[in-house]
Every structure is written in structure tokens, then in C-alpha cells.
Amino acid sequence: MGKSEAKEAKRLNKLSKEEQKWEKFVEDTESYLAVAGLSKKLNKVIKLNLELGKDEVDERESSIKAIRQMLKNRKGTPFRRGLNSKIPAHVRIAIDEMCEQAYLDYKAFFDCSNFYKYVFRKHKKSGGGYYSDADDYAKVMVKRLKDTLMEQYEKGEWDGNPFTNAVVAK
Image 1 (tube, helix red, strand yellow):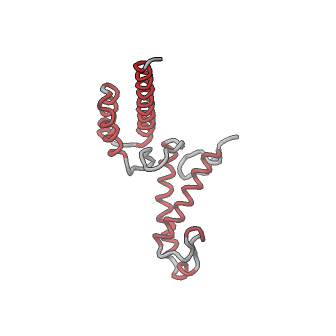
Image 2 (tube, one colour):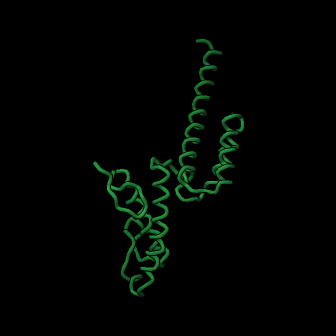
């Protein structure tokens, strides 16, 4: 294989990686749009950006940035920092809804009695000590809840529907 053939093979390999990245992005976006319940106008703008990226390869990066910007910080969005989740969009949305409710409940619970701040302690791995306030307590408890729900879904112990404890048949 000559230098020009090696360069062409490398270019095709890179192209296929970019194509794979684009296809994964489109798949994640479309699966999220199907369950997110966004406005018709926002859905239309996002779909137009997907079409632009499909039709014009040079515009894909711009389309990706625009769509990520529009969908970041929404319930169940696949566009967060960190690793991509294998959990489907409808389950991420359910988890986010449940965690929002739990946050309010944990905060109200912590505030309902003055002595809780002297009783509940952080895990030693988190530095130990007492929680500074209800917000601090609620954030830690919601993180635990989120981890538990994700684990239950991955193990098939929860079907992913919000506010249910339905178990997936084994």
C-alpha cells in the first residue's frame, strides 16, 4: 500500500468515525424528542437543524452545537456533561421528575424539626460532619435516590415509569 492509499484509508476511517458520531447524535436527539414533550416550534427548529446536518456535512458541527444549546439543562436531556447514559430518555425524564419532587420533600423534612441538623451526618467519605442546611441535605439525598433509581432500572427491578414501583418481569 502506497502513501496515497494509506492517506485515503485514514481519511475514510476518519470520515466513518465522524459519520458514526453524527448518527449517534441524531439517534439520541430523536429518541429524546419523542418523549420530552417540547413545544412544536422547538421541535421544528431542532428537526430543521438535523436536516441541515444531514444534507450539508460541513454544517454538522454547527447543527450539533445549536441543538445541544437548545436542549441542555432540560429534564432527561442526553446532552449533559460526563459520560453518555445507556438509560433511555423516557427513564431519564422520569428520574429527573422524581428527583425534583424528592428534593422538595427532603428539604421540607429537614426543616420540619430543629434537631435534625444535629442528628444527621454526612458519610465519612463525604467529609463527615453535619449538613450545613436543608439544601445541603436534600442534594445529598437526591443524589442517592438518583443512583438507586438508575441501578434499579439497569437491573430490571424498575420499569422506568415515573412514580411507580413496577418491576420488570424476569
